[in-house]
Image (tube, rainbow over all chains, first blue to last red; front, top):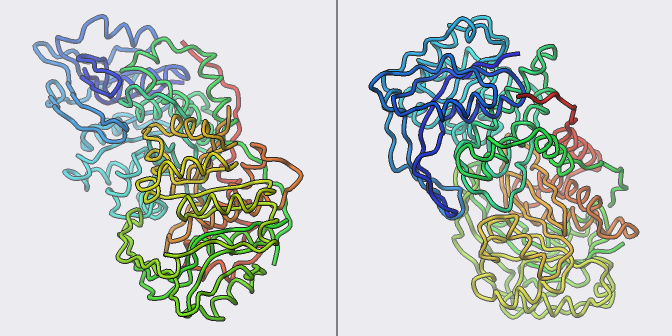
Length: 311
Length: 311
């Protein structure tokens, strides 16, 4: 089945302790799409400028991603982000954000994109997310990501948008900020009250946590000795997750399915951060994905053996 | 089998968003011992002053903990710590630390304590930890915790002490600090190079991670809607972990055993933080422990179902 993703298509300039790159293919929709493409048909919706050439489009095409709804804005420049990570990679500083063609973006979805089984509303202005959501009335599963900027500047609109989606996927710190609730379990419960079937809190190097009506699940990140560039890890995670959901159209949004979907998201995100930008994912093989999911299972598996308690 | 724990026995004054208490029974050895007592015979070694009365000793006795090696220092005052947690409980501020009888503490272990199968060197000065370790030459498993104070003031001594133990259990931030390595996997590898069979990194609300020669395991914390007082969570975790190891003398320090031991530590730590000080653990039942371990298994369990990969 098909996933449509709406979000940023970008050039990133990234500096990390392991080096720097001035112009990497990036953006939430790109990282999401490349990751999801291992599991489902993917269609990308988003604007680019004159500087976005065939080489960039070919990276998506090479993974079978449909690029018909990438909107070329004549005379425009592609969204640009520049940032730097501290030595421990947990803190990042944005040096520059140039919205460029994104400033006036009005999503126009083709019929094929509207008809997608699964829709992911990447991190863009919540009014735009809601417009897209309305264009895809028939979508079986709708997911949404957001960020501190929209929580601070458009919280009411964001909550209205969340009311119309099935799955909220968001950083844990932003879930706390969005709900004004420091305890993550309470924060997730509040967000579930707005309508979604489930909430997935992304926790960076600690992994991710799944909250649904009466259940909880937590999955660690895959342990890596070297993380070269964390940019796009959350988008790759979401791409694997929603790709897996799209690949299982007959199962409904069950807790068991979501757990397995998170494992694929986790595995794909772990590859994403091993090199700069999309470099690692571009040459990722099926066997590598399978092996990493199997390893992830091995490092989370344990047996509860009864023990005699005392005193 | 028996666990001997050496560490602080304290009175704590704690303020959290849910209230405050001026005089709680606390200290690393106390939290460790109460937790371990659900799984093994426990002996506590540490000094107290005149202000430490029968009521406090009875809390330990009620859980079957042997208190023969609690050393009463006539005219002395018990170790006192006062601190406050911020609203999100992740940051804590120490207002006051009075070493009191701990300032001149020279551990004196009875033959019975020296003969313990398992020894845990709670967070005290590393020279003292090494002295105790030398008194317990026959211990089958020796564990150690430490903290930023000793990393900053006695790092060389601490590393020498770690060289003589089987299991290092330490906060992840302190493992990074100790090794000067921001990546946790690399930091654990460096610490393993000093001699321990395994390293357990405590990650607070995110759970814990186990590193051994060629394996990794991660376990989330049990999700709680209300954490009343995080004080002693790490010590309760270690108590459950080492109590479980002591309860399985025939298994060796295998990865599988350590995983199950971490689950008991995680369950006991989750109860510890539900109320102030030792209040919750004092009335904890066997059924509650068993149920929480089972729940912990349920929230970490997932099945790796093969999926057809694409493109």
